[in-house]
Length: 134
Ligand SMILES: *[C@@H]1O[C@H](CO)[C@@H](O)[C@H](O)[C@H]1NC(C)=O
Ligand SMILES: *[C@@H]1O[C@H](CO)[C@@H](O)[C@H](O)[C@H]1NC(C)=O
Ligand SMILES: *[C@@H]1O[C@H](CO)[C@@H](O)[C@H](O)[C@H]1NC(C)=O
Ligand SMILES: *[C@@H]1O[C@H](CO)[C@@H](O)[C@H](O)[C@H]1NC(C)=O
Ligand SMILES: *[C@@H]1O[C@H](CO)[C@@H](O)[C@H](O)[C@H]1NC(C)=O
Image 1 (cartoon, helix red, strand yellow):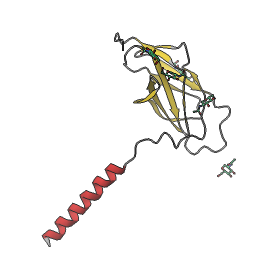
Image 2: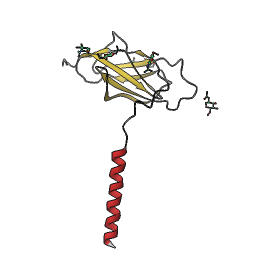
Image 3: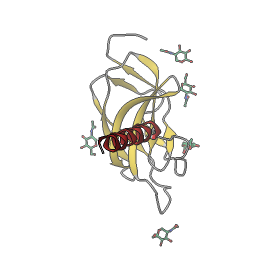
Image 4: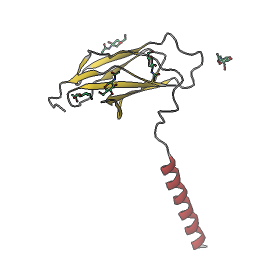
């Protein structure tokens, strides 16, 4: 009887571990239906660490039915998406969301990527004010 409970427990934990291992990260490739063009920030924009800004994007040509209108904005550096979240849980139909500039090294190689139904990145811009050059 005890060994059966033990076996059950072991099976349960195996299943739990498998579930955790299989939990997938955000799949960038599968979200490419609507790509709203980011208007701000753009080339020439300089953000200071700790300041707040409204990221804005063009909502004029969105499809009638959007499968996922919950937005996510991540910071990109040197052309690569970082795990740093600038905004999450807003509607991609809003056309803007306020973000706080994160504490990151000074660089002109930042951009942002906006996900909803899709993903599109901004032009490269600068973040300054940390006092640390990359
Ligand atoms: C991002 O938006 C621009 C401007 O609308 C468009 O030209 C570009 O193809 C889009 N990028 C992607 C990956 O959809
Ligand atoms: C962002 O836009 C909202 C609404 O237009 C405004 O109230 C807010 O002050 C703006 N934030 C910044 C940092 O400009
Ligand atoms: C959008 O969704 C509605 C409700 O599900 C449906 O009636 C309509 O045909 C859809 N329109 C398009 C263009 O897919
Ligand atoms: C931004 O910078 C990265 C790295 O230098 C580059 O790969 C990418 O093409 C640039 N993006 C734009 C929109 O210029
Ligand atoms: C930004 O990227 C360009 C092209 O890859 C590179 O030449 C430049 O040194 C980078 N700037 C910084 C501040 O990392």
